[in-house]
Image (cartoon, rainbow, N blue to C red; front, side, top):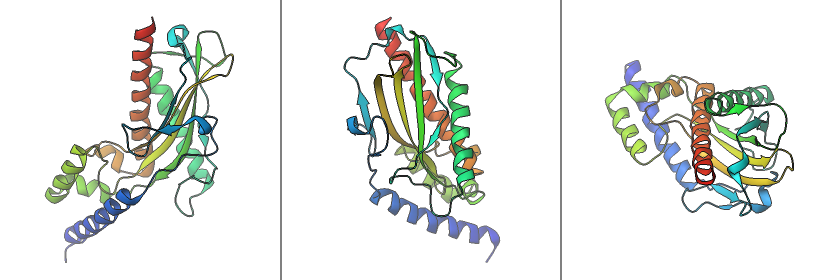
Amino acid sequence: MTTRRMLLGLALSAASLIAVAACSEDSQRPSSLTSSGKLSPDASIHGAWIYKSPQANYSKYRRVMIDNVAVYTGPEANFGDNTADADKQAWAAAVGEEMRKVIGEKYQIVSAPGPDVLRISTTLIGVRQTVGGVATVTRVMPIGIAINAVRGAAGAGGTMTGGIEIAVELHDSTSNDLLAGAVRQISPAAFDVGATLSTTDTVRASARDAATTLRDAMDKNLAKTS
């Protein structure tokens, strides 16, 4: 059996197992977040949780303060067995770098509270690791392309590629009032080949997607209230 065929067989077998696990896994509401007691299931996204304060007034916010990303230590943390603390911290730092990069493209990032400053707190709850190399192979072989096309159409990540679960909480930087919170499981787009090279690349790509979604939501809220 050629190496190519062995890789393909491994990829397809693992993809089947991942698909079964993804269908059977239910997301738990994290119990150790500031927003935990207020989070409710998000009816529009499976496995997601959300909170929006009815009193939130976004019209005054023009700058943002981004906290360092925290590594979640509650019972719902999901980083896999035997994952080193150093890896968790490195992934959290990578998420923070991508958040600052994406949001900083449109909003001034500051380091101190202020009346027009929105504080963003992000917590990395878990990381599903990527099988580097094999994940990339599944994007370029014909059968893998077909499988990933189906997964992409369904909004799922690609085969053998992991993802992240994060919580994002928005606070008024001066009063510390909680304005909104959300918990999401995010995987890179099915054909984002760069995200398949390593778990760190997957984490970065997922964080960019999360930050872009957050930035777009901020744009819409400001547009409504400006």
